[in-house]
Image (tube, rainbow, N blue to C red; front, side, top):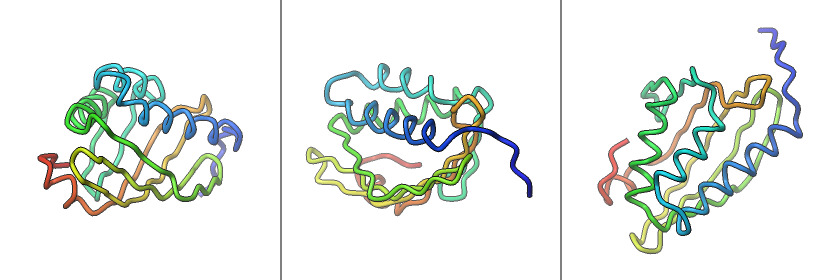
Length: 137
C-alpha cells in the first residue's frame, strides 16, 4: 500500500501532546469543554474501532468523549511510549482515576490526514476497569 499523505512527524507529535494535554485537563474543565476541544482535533469523517467495535463520525466520537469525561472527572492518562511513522502513530497508555480507584492499560493507533487531524483510529484495552465504574464501551 502506498501512502501519499504528507503529514509530518513533528505535527503528529504536536497533536498527540495536545490531545493528552486536553484530556488531562479534565479536573479543571467540564466534560463538554473537553469534548469540544478534542473534537477540533478530529476529521469530520473520522472512523475508528474500539476493541474491534466500529464507530464513525465526529458526533459519535464527541458523544463517547462526553460520556467518558462526565463519568471520570479526575481522568488522567500517561503515555508510556510513542512510535511515529507518518501518517500513523502508535502509543501505549494508562488511564487512571483516583476517585474510582481505577487504572486501565491500553494502546492506540491513529492515522492523521494532511492537516494533522485524526482520520482513523484503533484502540485496544481491557474494558473491565471501565465497566466496573459504569462505562460500557
